[in-house]
Amino acid sequence: MSANVSNPRVLDVDQAMALAIERHHAGALHDAKVLYEKVLAVEPEHAGAHTSLAMIHQAAGELDAARARMDKALEYLPTHAGFWLNSGAIDRARGDDDAAVVAHERAIELDPDLAAAYYNLCDLHLASGRAEDAVAVCERRLERAPHDWRALAFKAHALEAAGDLARADHLLDHERFVRRYRLDAPKGYPNIESFNRALAAHIQRHPTLERDPPGRSTRNGFHTGELFRGQLGPMAAFRRMIDKAIRQYRRDLPDDPEHPFLAAAPRRWNVSSWALVLERGGHEVAHIHPQGWLSGVYYVQLPAGMGPKDPDHAGWLEFGRPTAELHMPIPLRVRQVAPREGRLYLFPSYFYHGTIPFSQNRPRICISFDVRPE
View 1 (tube, rainbow, N blue to C red):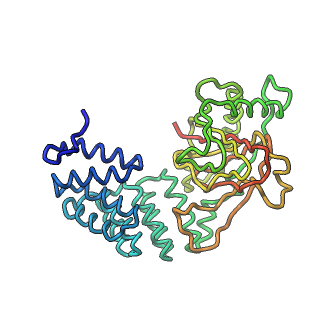
View 2 (tube, rainbow, N blue to C red):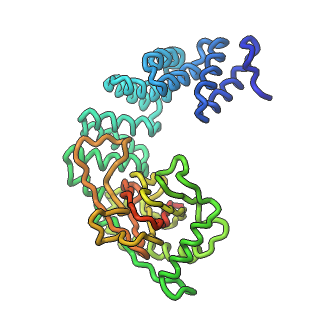
C-alpha cells in the first residue's frame, strides 16, 4: 500500500517517512523535502524528519536553515549518536570546527562503536593542525576495533603529520610490505603472454563490465563485478596462481606480533576479485580496501611505452596519497611503482593507493583482488 501524502490529516507518518528516505537516497531531494515537511505538519516533534531536512538544507548550502533544523532534532531526541554526527557535519560546513569537535565527541560518547565519528574527528584535528589529537582519536578507535583498517590508515598518516616518522614508517613500510611476483604461465598456455591475452578477452566480454560505475574509484574506464563467480574461464587458473603467491607472501612476513597488520595475518582466507579496463586519461583515484587484509593487482595488458622507462610515470601505481577525506597538513611522501605485464603486486589493504593518468590509446587492463580472513 502506498503512503497517502496528499492530505496531511490522513497521513501515515511511517509510510511517508519510508518514502521520503527512499527519495532522499535516490537524490530526489525536492520530493523528499516535501514529504518530510508533510510529516512535520502532522508530527512537529518528529526528530528524524528534522534531521533529514537539515541534511537537505546542508546539501543546498543553506547552512543557517540546516543548523536550525538540526537544533530541533537534538531538542526532541538528544541521545541519538547519528544526530550528533550530522550536527558536527553542519558545524564543520559552517566553519565552526570547535563545535564540530564537541559534536563528534558527543556522538562517540553516546555510541562508542560509531566508526564514522572517529574518522571525521581525526580529520577535524588534522585540518586544525592538531595531529597528536588525531593520532589519539585513531588509537581510541583501534582499541575497540583492532581490525578497523581505515582507522589504521588514518593513524599512520596522522603520525606522519605529527612528525613521528618512525612510528608512521613502521605502519607504512613499503619496502617490507609491497611485494612483486612474476607469474608463470599455467598449464595449457605456451607462455604468460598467451595467458594474458586469454585473461584480457575474458575481462573485455565479461557480463558485469560497466563504465565508471558509481561508488567506485575508476575514472574514464570500465570496472567488472566479481570475477570468481559464474563462468571462470582463465580466472580458474589465475585463482590458483595468486593463491600460491598469497601463501608465499604470508610465509615471508616477519615475526612482529606488535604490528597490527602482521598480527591479523589469517590462516584461512577468501579472495574477491574484479578487473579494470582503463582508457586514455583513465586512472584510479586514491583509496583503500577497508574490508580486506591484503590486496593485489596483476597487470594483464599495458599500452606501449608504459613501464619502468617512462619518465612521466604514466599509468604507474602510487602509494601514500590519502583521499580528500583526510586533510594532510604536510607534503605527502608518495611512492610510485612501475607496472609491468605479467607482474603481480601484493600490499596491505590499508595502504592508500591509486594510479597516474596516461595518454596512450591502448587500454590498460589489470585484475585487482582482496584477501579477506574467513
